[in-house]
Length: 76
Length: 560
Image (cartoon, rainbow over all chains, first blue to last red; front, side, top):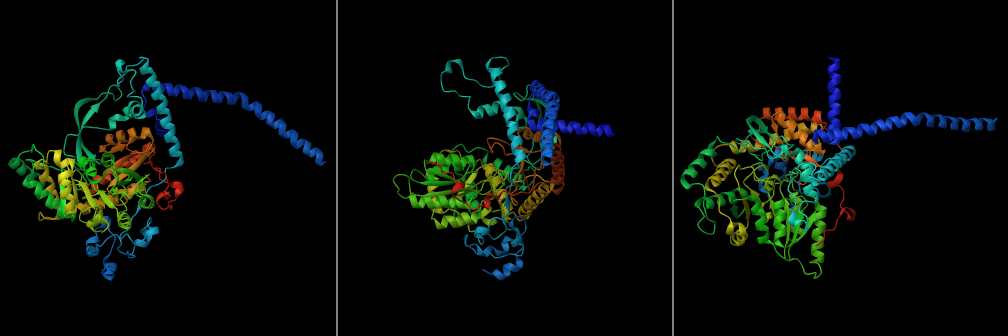
């Protein structure tokens, strides 16, 4: 019962996605082209984020700790 | 004018149904308004010149939400990209080309199918074409039967399955007073006339085609409108496009509303007069153009214009707005110009006894110089008329192309108009006509209120039986038409080029033949589809366009 509701909701979300991007009116092969492009782009974004974000976070952390660290030294 | 009596008796009701109580004060647009018991809270848009209106004039155009506008453009972007892809495939013969193309011999001529409208038809309209031009196979009354059709090649061709979709609720016909029917007294009268006169006339009015019925119709319409004389034609579109050239010509100026119907635009262009366009229903814009016309005269020579003709419509069929007639008449008088009013949608549908915008505002029909209207909407027939002073109509009788060249009215059609008009006027001894007008006014108020309550964006005046429901996104145009038909409600969806490209809409026309039950069913279905497609955009943020003082920055100069 609950599962069916979730399924319906997901289908509704998918339908909204179809409508907003206008692929609702496209032919099936065009839809698959659009889906392929979207999935590729999203996948690349996620992968890039996975690879680069941790490095950037570590660098930023190092930078800020240095800044605040030097400040505390000065005040002392 | 018995103002005290009015104050007591005046109750603003739907569609001006209280007006006959003070029909005596039809002087002109300058009748001083009186503060009715409820008018203070209701009048929104007339603060800058209060006093001209005798009834609340509530007209709203809600702002397009920013997110919706952006998403709409994104949708058009996706469709355009895929359109280019498909055009590319067609050009390199990778896929079969269904549409018309230039022939090889004409390769070096001016291209015929490469402009934006062709691109739009080929790549955007074609994908949702199944929501348009559906054949129906019964009287277009409150319910209608439709032929079922399918397409196996994505709307390039259609096949009829042979099935009939029965009892689809008809929210699309201009059947305002419900005279499109095959049961009542009108039909009997029409059948009698058909057996007496036959169907065709085979000649024009100026030759052997002037029947006694034509004369009867014209005197009846003149009486109905309260004008001196009327000339009737067999086609509404031609009434506009052929009469404007007879009225104005070179050296004259036409001031035309930006949303005027194609027939008016065509007529104005054919006339050869200079055309200037004012913002939709915007009186500041109109006044500025009038002032400029008087001050500067014709371009270069600076001679005064021979005539200045203001062209407006009664109800604008795409926006559902009602013309600000009292103000237009006041301006017309102030600047001594002429007024041409197209009452195609408003005649029969507005006013306490169905006499159109003039009666709705309680004005004098003589203040409108040329009253034009059609019989194809409220009267369930076909054709159009022009009414006005006797000299004017006699002139048109001789000089208008429609009288000289068009085959005259078919007698059964004439009889349908006569019978329905007599019914509206109560001359058939019944009160059906009165009842229908009341019913339409109530339906209009009820339906608009319910839709607003549900949260849809609805355009136009609260008394206009044309209800534009905004859809915006291109995929939703097709989806709305399909989903509504799936639920047995037939609606008309409208997109570019009939509307601005982002303001696609569904246009619902109410009718006196809709019972409350039918309306409730339709509302329930619209609610359902509205939730499914996320159409309830309304944030109740009214577009301040009409209240904003008009200045130079909002004005776009039109070239001569």
